[in-house]
Length: 460
Image (cartoon, rainbow, N blue to C red; front, side, top):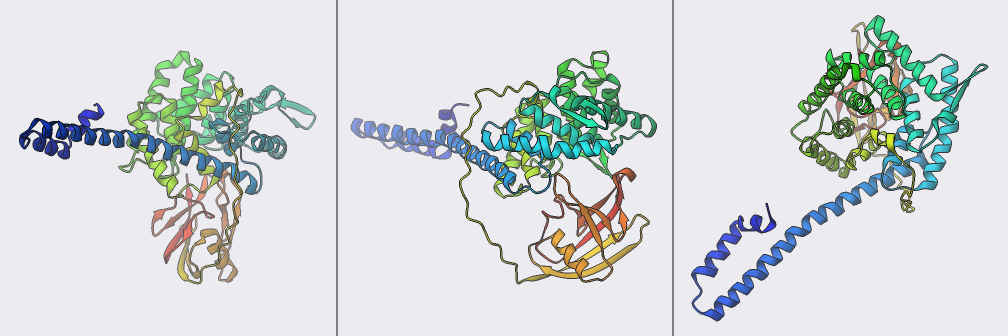
């Protein structure tokens, strides 16, 4: 529909035409009225045509802000460097090549050494190894030059990743589950595929069967993140022609993934929740979905970003490619030539946040694996993070204890009241507030009112 036709369908236009045609008695007044009419129409058309430009400018400004926030997180990043952050920065259209190079050096030293130690100790690190591979690929790093020395043997990164995937596959054969989970398994398939490695059909088949039998769950809830990652992985396999013998099964799996993602889209545009929508959009883009399938979700992400929902670097790293209508598959054909280098971080004044004088009462219920429960009450400053609140509760020596480990999303609970929730036992601590599952981690969720936090040892 043309802009002129949109204007003619407005009530104001009909009213103006009636006055112009019904109340004019002289040629001069008619010409004057006609001239004024065209001025009015032209002005409205100019206003209408400016809105898409204004929206585009606002969206570009948001992208730039998110890109800068992600780049700035490199300066405050604690622990090991995050390969997911590097991947998103490299996929982006805007770059600060010097800072990205510094982060690449940290990845190839600090993270590399940590992975080497894990592999030496025979730990399963499929997910982080796959993300490391994708991060290096996004910087056009020659993966054949990257190796790990385990004892007296030195083998390439891709060889170790393939071995991890074989171990995962064999575990599926005997227990119907990977050693880690299907999210990490999908990441492994994606990393190998985008690196130009032919993925073993037996490995791909296990992922296809998992889609067919709907094994992507976290407790009783569908894991949208896993469906999205599996969609990108299997689409890469299809694009590479690696699964020609079972093409119909592969297409059926991709169709089911797309159907699952679209049926999980809420009325506000989110697919799953605020923190799974970015990967879901990436998957729909990778699978060649029409704009109508992902446009509402992109708008939902923009709305959340403007509300500062995505203040966690990991969260930003997953939505930034989606907002630029890209996916992790982009790295397969990436060429690091003639890249933009205009992204500059302006100095910002440090913000001092004073502790709130307002206290809120927090009830904390711990439910162990045997069903036994204990309830504690503690007063904490308003706007404390859940992690800070739990530290206050532990400090009161009322019998509550906890420990946490680091992850790419920040700290996560590993032990509560002496009981572990270990990945090897397929258990995790499920957190909810007033019976609503938390979508943020313990360091991101803020206590803003009196509420009940339930920490439950759950099987997935």
